[in-house]
Length: 250
Image (cartoon, rainbow, N blue to C red; front, side, top):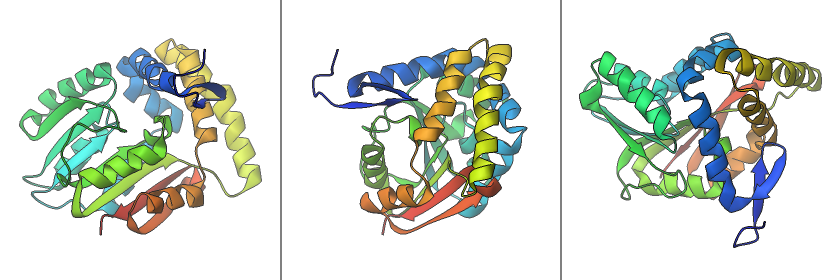
């Protein structure tokens, strides 16, 4: 059945009505919430931790800053930010309550509960006022948003003038042979890991497919610029398996 607007979008390699994507994505992350961190280590052989550290190195958190981490899940990025920035605070915003519940438990165990807020919300319609945050981060989440351009416009809105956007996302390898080898690993190994570790093959099949539907580095940089950000740059990580994009609200 088509959506009320007649618009469609992709859910992995499947084309679906646009107004159904958020619910489908919510279902995926609800299913994998309890094993999400374990699967990240297994899928990337722990390299995702280095990528997130590289994100913090480039962001260079400062004392007293206020961070909004969208699609922040269980808090990996927020914890790293607070570790580097004394007296800073962070808000983790995620569509999936199960991910936030797991994150709250981590924060309480790390004695960081008083510096962290956990908010259920949609990246395309953030429940925050304009000019509120010093930094906006989103790691491995923006490819799951129904309308990426709308999420980037919202990021620009909630940042203060001089605020910074930082996006960490899977991307495209510039070498076709390396991309083919990576595809063979992704489509053949990762869904099997998902079944073995999380008991969920289909969710991890979707996650692999969603990476292939995400724009390449240059195309995404153009989207960031179109949302109003200046001084937009990107850096490839692990030959382009992932990429960091940076932009400023000037």
